[in-house]
Image 1 (tube, helix red, strand yellow):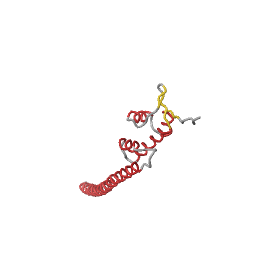
Image 2 (cartoon, one colour):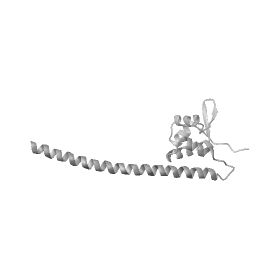
Image 3 (cartoon, one colour):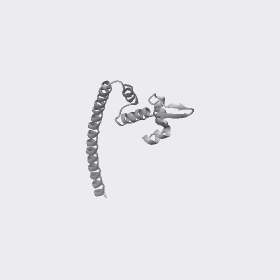
Image 4 (cartoon, one colour):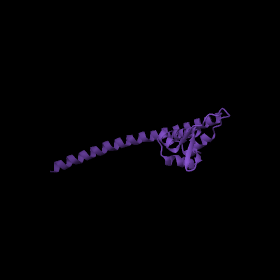
Length: 135
């Protein structure tokens, strides 16, 4: 006799992963999750839980849904998944480079903002002193 397969409702996944049921339905529409249907009720398998975990991890890493879907689709339980891992490494490296570039830009912007704030405060104080002398 086969062991019973764990099944999860949409509310279970929503609560467990702190996402809305609307988000889960959206992922279903995109083909990222494939719950079984029992009338109007959606039943998710352990594999759906893993896919959701990977989707949310990809989101945290800044991957698009399409990128996450591409990586998830590459999974093959019959192989060592070296192509999937290489694709993941490539995407991580590209994303890290983008984020590091954004970080450099933000650091430069912060430096410029501080500089212009200092200059503006100095000019404002000079105006105040001039106005006070005229009174």
